[in-house]
Image (tube, rainbow, N blue to C red; front, side, top):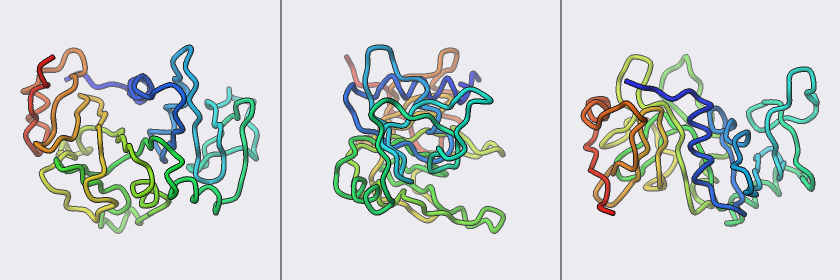
Amino acid sequence: MISLSDNALAARVARDIPDGSYVNLGIGKPTHVSAFLPEGREVIYHSENGILGVGPTPPAGQEDVELIDASKRFVTAVPGAAYFEHADSFAMMRGGHIDIAVLGAYQVAENGDLANWATLDEKYPPAVGGAMDLVVGVPTILVMMRHVNRDGSPKLLRRCTFPLTGLGVVSRIYTDLAVLDVTPEGFRLVELTPGNSLSEVQALTGAPILHPMPT
């Protein structure tokens, strides 16, 4: 199986973000997306700790210790960036002012249910953050994740077994193995990571994968 690196996966997500979008990047893998803005495209990245206009990670040795995103990762600010308190940041998220959120996930169900804040494992304390606000207030939720857990068990399922963040909220899923849309009929293949077959990816998925729509 061919598995994309985190950077290659972030670049793949960035390709699908339309010009002029306001985009929240969730904690973890999604934070890499800001480094892969396609040439000629303007996207305004939002971090829920109070930044609008997040730029890519600074080069080593050039970090500003007072400029971090919600995952405590050093970031840069693009020209015209704005800073504000949490109340204003969450008002943007809840009020429909953000177009797209790119979130990580522990599990996604075939109907678009999202579980990304608790695993019920005491070694990994639950952390809601702003995810529940984002899935309610942002119209398009993209998920960026590994296709399977470390033990090889599927993260894409018929139904989530972990506590839910939102019901039927996910539009598209980007994994290291494939890109899938969430449709009323279930997961539908958009594309496979080059070198992988549908049967191979299906064997690692806990719900049926439908063939792409005819073009």
